[in-house]
Length: 217
Image (cartoon, rainbow, N blue to C red; front, side):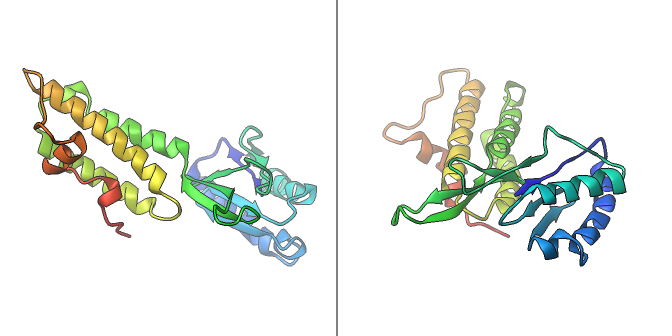
């Protein structure tokens, strides 16, 4: 799997350029035919998939991007990933792809797809921003409604693959931020009802964890 990156060009302009890269890739003399390779592209981000991602594919991509199009390849972000190797993974469009061993048959492996760590960090940062101390004046229910609206779009995008761990991560972080918000808003030490967990108490206040929300396309 070969992942080239163009440097110093806007996503919109790169998308226009890459239309012609797509064209050359699928021509009769392109890697689609002689390497049985596949090009997966979204706007200015793309990967080349092939059983054998050898030097010939790399030369085609770099010569087409640099010599034919006049772009500069970003060497720091361009790499070849061999997914069959242990611990190898690909981050693409917010997801991480890697092969994992099947829990029921150790001889088999399956392609595991989940939310990338960088995508998880971005949503944590957004939640932190929404629950900062300068938002202490916001009542808990309107704040929860805002968080729900933000996470609805996030969950709609991250709705494919193995997501239970990612959802638990976001739910755990959201719970901690909401607890901190309640404690800041209260002049006295905020106390939840006796015998009720924070998990249940926050849900009584209107919070619905990602793990309990239906995924909407």
